[in-house]
Image 1 (cartoon, rainbow, N blue to C red):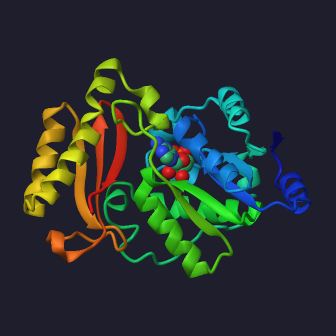
Image 2: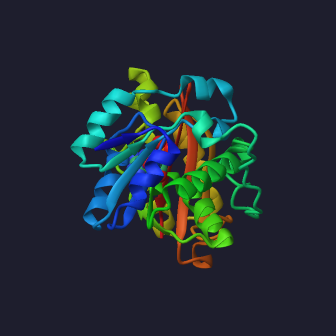
Length: 279
Ligand code: AMP
């Protein structure tokens, strides 16, 4: 695996490749969910390029940025084990050269305003900016991203469409721990007590799926889900049942053929998100 720190070096190497490039952008502190993006790119015949960049512009809370885990040596070993071909670890100045304004200011309509958008102002603008910048650097054929960040995928899909970018977005299913907790770099910050409480997030999503199948009114499912999370020592921010395409609330199970439940909850100091396709 080659490791690049400079945009020019990475671009030169990619320019000499004949195999299609599959790109998996990450913020590091890697786990099996990230590695699955790399493995999927390899399975689909791509040269796998991963990046590790803790993007300051997508953190609305400076303490969250400061506390974000950084484990580059271990990450490098994990990527090697997943047969990643190249790793890009740029500095902030490489990604955002001083004096250049690379900010993406697209109108995502409500896609970046609901759910995460409501609780993390500016997050999606920062995320879209860095993904667009990284796509411009790597110019991959395929972009591999996880279903774990369902709303992020919707915003990136819309950005690719609006900017007519020549890349195929591939969604990788959420990789979970054996007790159902979605893998996340933030999980390593959970206290033992909160680690024990956190699987209630996935359990509640599964409960919502069966409640929807049993035709329970959606409003009742949402409010009962919030109570279930709170009863398990979690502090939920939202539990929304939305159309998987538009991310707008669904009033009734007949209203859409693609229904997703999305939630965010604090486990102690750690904010976790997860989602499940209900229909
Ligand atoms: P992050 O490092 O959290 O910014 O995530 C980088 C990429 O990995 C994003 O496309 C995430 O959606 C994806 N990802 C994170 N956790 C998981 C998971 N548990 N399963 C699948 N993909 C994931």
